[in-house]
Length: 430
Ligand code: UD1
Image (cartoon, rainbow, N blue to C red; front, side):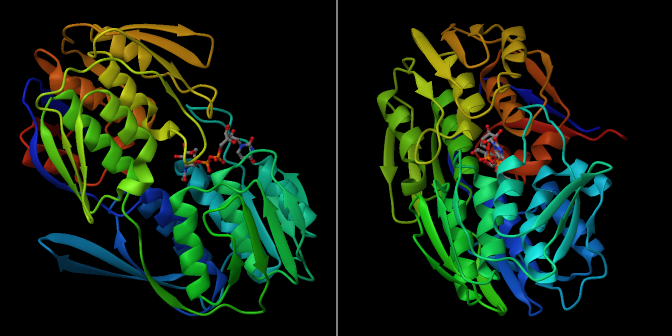
């Protein structure tokens, strides 16, 4: 298993190109299953989560073509997906276990074929991650669902039908899944309390290009009028707001200045406001964001994760790393996942002063310095928080279990090295 070695203390300065959004790419790839025609997605990030979903689609019978393009000095990948016919309607355990978002095939395959079997993903490091909202909603649309041998077996022999669905929680995954299923259902579907994350807007844009009839983009009520068939389309994946936010924090914690090329400031309002409150200069440009912390007197801030446009849970661990060296005390409240403080003990091993209260809140009292240590994290964003801590710690930090980072941060070492970090990957056989 590879490791990452970081020698802390360098101020980061320069430009980082923001990749396509992982959490948009995953449902967009699954949406290609709704049509027999080709769907071309450009600005695809090169990440192991994408490879995992691609492997599942290959298993289902999708043909995938990959093309590399040079755009404005960086390499970008374009993938074309075509599922003329399905060779299997089963998403096996070995695929789903590697990547939970494999559940995105559920809605599209069921809607197009009337049958699908999906291994239940089970729990994970950041929580139980149930699928009840996905399944209850499909039942309301006329699907018959059984749990058999660890699999969801769903049937809709006569096709899905439109329904008026009210989500108990604004789940991102359920919104994407039901949205995709509803495009091919008979009649109209209304989803109330839909999630409003930008990645859902990106999915709606692709579905509309494919011929779907959807109203209510960027609102909590989506209306979908089912059509009998969807066509192929081409789409560029939006930039990754979580990657951009993570590198913004890298600028902040090292008191440097980084321009995030391609980032959309509008998608990062809540985290950028916290950085501004920390005395960091944020310049929003048309196609980039400049984060300048060179003269900042970093003082702690309270953050509370929430559904979009609230503060994203996927930036909570990274902000906590920043708070460990900010002046005064900060309160971090996690409202989305029940077990998302796994980075705390590792940050404390590096000298952070953090008190966790129950499952949902933590008080962070700023310290003058962190010191390097061998650390490991149990999820993707927590791993990045440890990289951030390593960037300012005294000495050499080794971050283990790099496969977490490879799921969601494209060319991590390359990007950080280019802005001045002393970082390298140590290759080790598995
Ligand atoms: C997505 C993101 C993940 C992010 C999360 C919240 C992807 C691939 N992943 O995950 O990075 O942290 O949104 O912004 O896009 N819930 C239920 N029942 C369900 C579904 C969800 O109770 O059927 C609960 C979950 O336990 C959680 C909350 O709803 O407490 C939000 O989950 P959800 O928005 O569905 O997260 P994901 O789509 O899995």
